[in-house]
Structures are given as C-alpha cells and as structure tokens.
Image (cartoon, rainbow, N blue to C red; front, side, top):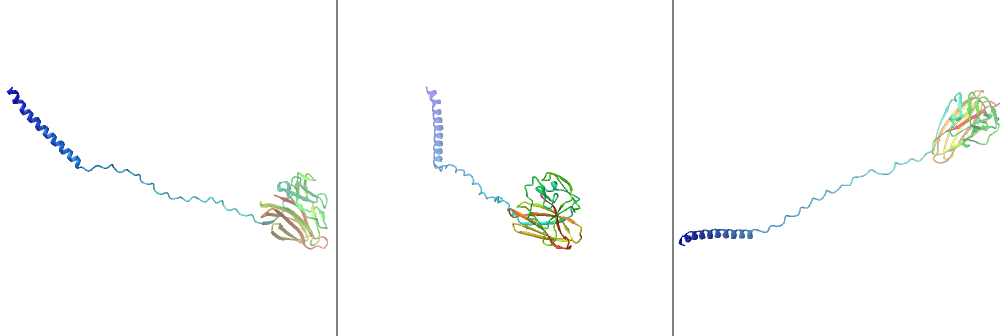
Length: 250
C-alpha cells in the first residue's frame, strides 16, 4: 500500500500543476478577448457611378431645300436639215401647214392638239418653195407624206402667224420651221406666266430662205407659250413677207 502511495502522490502533484497551467492560460485568453475592441462588419462596397453621358449631336433631318421653278426661255436659230422627220422629232405633238391648201393643217393624230395656231391673218397663201423636205406618218387628216415642200406664207408688214403650246414646270422644246422672202421677220415669244423674248431675222433675197427656231422653255406654273412670227419690214412691194412650214413639240 505504501508503494502505491509513493507513485500516486507525485502523479497528483503533476496533474494539479498541469491543470493550473491550463486554467491560467484560459483566464489570460478570456481577458485578452474581452480587451479587444469589437470588430465591425466591413463596409459595403459601393460600385462607382457610371460617368455622365454626353449627348452626341445628330445630323439634321431637315430636307434639302427645294427650288421653286422659274420662267425661262432659251432660243437658238439653226439651219433646217435636208429632211425633217416630224414623227421622230415631235414626241409630244407636231403640225404641218399647207399641203392641201392655204388653210389646211396636217397634224399628229395622237398629239392631243397640243400645238395650236392662232387666228390666221390675210393675205394667206400656200407655197411649195421650201428647199427642205418634211416626212410624217400617223398624221391626220393626211395619214402619211414624204418629201413635202409646202407651207403657208403672207405678204406685207404686220402680217404673220401665231403658234401656241402648253407650258409647265417641266422643261419643253418647241421647234418652229419658218421662212422669209424679201422681208425682216420679227419673232416674239411670250410665256403666259410672265417671260418674253424677241428676235429678228432679215432676208433681202426674193427667193425663200428657211430656218428653224429651237425654243426651250420652262414656266413657274401651268400656262402656255405663244410664238408670233410677223413681217416686221417688207423689202418687196409685190410680196415681201414671212412663211410657216411646220412645228414640233417635245
């Protein structure tokens, strides 16, 4: 019994020391935890605000300015070809004068009477003196003709012819085939919407001379163009004057 006590007493002492050390450590740890300040939760991370958007100017959607049509007349006097095909040239309408008499008028059957002649002035004569030839098909009342040299003429100062055609905001071309014998022909062109043009052509010879007036025009609104071909001066007391053969509109 004494022998067991010799071993047990030192073990108890050692165990008590170990327990004391453990308890001392627990106490120090507890005091240290109490002394530490409470840890606050980490601040919430706020995402940065997106940069302010700068407005980008857009191109203007304003339509391009439209230009108002104006009244304009452009004229050119040109030689007459040896042969004139009225059907090919007069895509809108064409007219020929004098094949069947001094008051006869041959025209495009499908032209819708776009080209008109004003009230005839006297004297009015039929001539066959044109050095050029006129051809057509699809005409009325004469359906077709080839190699025509006829036309109408007048004598004396102040006498002549008037031709008219529609005018609008689209460009059009009216070609008038005229002649003169020992006379000065005065050309007066007028748009009903407010534009005028004047020109003259003088022929001293007693043989007929011919020419073509190519008139390009445009009006500011719907109207008509009027062309006067008048004897401005006569150089032959017998019959100095002007003549008219044909007209085309395209």
